[in-house]
Each structure stands twice: as structure tokens, then as C-alpha cells.
Length: 374
Ligand code: 5AD
Ligand code: SF4
Image 1 (cartoon, rainbow, N blue to C red):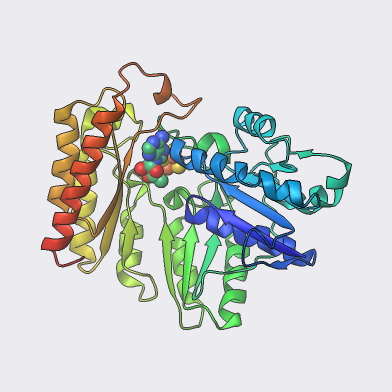
Image 2 (cartoon, rainbow, N blue to C red):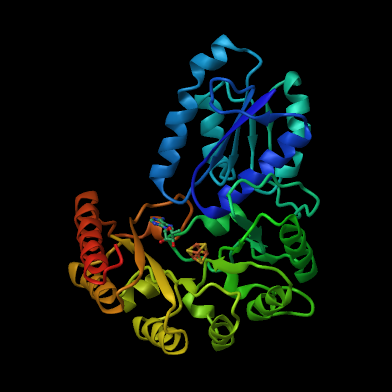
């Protein structure tokens, strides 16, 4: 019996697919090389932008024939998209051949659902569950081992669907993380450990007693072994001096920070509910560069946020020009159902979003060339 997993979206999802693979392997499935030879196909979906969802609809739809020819094929749709009740219902209606729809909180129940599938379609009820520490991982990212340190997000940036599909911030206990990393090191095949969370800088604030992310990093660096540790994603409003000092002083910590700015304009930042200004963002960059001269810094930007004017976009442009990041991702704003920004007046035309994203990416290309980074 073979499985095949199709993963969309961020590293968190890549890692969650390793968990899904772990569950399936424990049930006796082995990893297949293609959809065609699979007995079970899992789509681990992303909801961050409309384009990601459209791809899922296209790819699930394409399985209709395969399912017709092989009635025993099990099709599962999991991940952020299915955590949205309306989308999940739409999916089930559009694709009667999908067998299991499971949200983000209950992956642990996948085994039970697969066993029950002969009794009819299995549909998760989207309840928030606890993190299951006992689930096995089938790691598949070469020398890099992903380690999840927290789930969820409390920030409610007005454009973002994540808090709705991943729930509130919940940190894993430091001991659980350390023991997982010890096992990873003991396996001997991983050179790099990447800590994952939507907002790693607020790690530990919800633990009793509270601990800081910098403290977690220091504890990890005390472990014996030949490895480096990296992390993502950081939120500028929570990036502390303690963390910058820790990155600077700990030899095992990779000198790299992904620090999404999203916009260079203060009015738009406020509308996005980012809770920092352009000036504050720049002051963090300066601090990082002063204390960690060789630090690589990358960022994310959204263009065409509701009501964004040409001048406001140009302030994003000038921020990118000023900072000269080691890389940026630029996205066209995509309205997500249920978020505050999706209901704002003054949605920007697609054509303008295209123009702005292309302009920003052209600048990025020029900077990479000039700085000899590309
Ligand atoms: N539209 C466009 N881009 C978005 N991002 C998050 N939500 C949206 C949205 N609704 C971008 C942000 C974030 C990255 C992971 O995706 O830039 O940092
Ligand atoms: Fe979304 Fe903002 Fe949370 Fe990042 S910090 S996941 S952009 S709400």
C-alpha cells in the first residue's frame, strides 16, 4: 500500500506533511513515487492567498478519473484550507469523490478516519485540539530537520487568515522541544535544525513560568553536537535586543533573520495592524547590522493592500531600496474571507497590484545584481 502527499504553502506545512507521512507509515503504507501508483493521496493545503486555494481545487479535481478507475483509492484533503468551514463544505460539494476532509488541529485522528472510510465520508468538525506530542515524524528534508516550537498566532494582522485557521498561540514546552532535538542530533544525519512558528519571537510567553525565545535558543546551543540552528518567522514588534545579542554571541545560531516588513508606509502598517512604524523597523535593521555584521536579512511585502496609494506603495519601494535585503518575497494582496481587510472599502484593482508587484520585483532583481547576491 502506497501513499502520496501533495504539499502547498509554508515550511510549517512541509513539516506537517512529515507528520502525516509518519502516521501513514505507522499504518503500514510506504511512500509512493507518483499519484498514479498511490492507494491514498493526501493534499496538505494552504489558505494564505486565493491562488494557493485555486491550485488545490484544480489538482483535486484532476483526480476524478483516477478515482473512477480505482474505487479503493482514498483521497484526503487536510491543512489550512479545510479548516475554513465554508471552503471545506464547498470542497465536499464540488468533489463527491473526496473521502476525508480534516482540519489543522486533528491530524492525530487521521488514522481513525482512514480505518472508518469504508463506512462513508469522514468529516472533521474543526474543533481546536491539543498538540499531540506522541505523533511520529517521517523526516524528509535532507540535512535539515524542522522542529515546530509553537502553533497559532495572536496578532490578527488585518489581511491574514492564519489566526483563523491555526488558532491562538500555544508554545510547546521547552523540555519537549529539547528532547526532540536531542533525538534528532542522536540520529546523526542532520546538520541543521530549523525552529518553526508563525511568530517565534513570542515563544514561551504563554508558558508557566514564562520563558523567552532567546532562552530557548541558548538551551538548544548548549546541546553537544555538530549542528546549526535557524528559525522562522520573526515579527518586528517582538524582536528583542536579547534575541539579537543571542544570535550574535551563539556560534551555533545561523546568522539569518526573516523579518517580514509587509509595507514601508506608516498609514498602511497601521491599517494592517502590524503595530510598528517604518522608523522602528529601520531601527531594528540598523541594530541587527551593527551587532551581527554578517547577518542575512530577508523580508515579505504585500502590495495593493486596500486603499494603498501610489505614494504609499513607493514608500515600500524606497524601504526595499534603502535596506537592500538579501532577498524579498512580494505578494499581491489577496482578500481572505472573514478577515478585517477583506471588508475594507477601497480594494485595489488587480491591474494595479500586478504593476506594483512587478515594479518591486524588478527593483529586487536590480539590487541582487548590484550587491552581487544573485
Ligand atoms: N494576501 C497577500 N499576501 C499575504 N500574506 C499573508 N496574507 C496575505 C494576503 N491576504 C503574505 C505575508 C506573509 C506571507 C507568508 O504571506 O507577506 O508574511
Ligand atoms: Fe498572519 Fe500577522 Fe500572524 Fe504572521 S503575524 S501569521 S502575518 S496574523
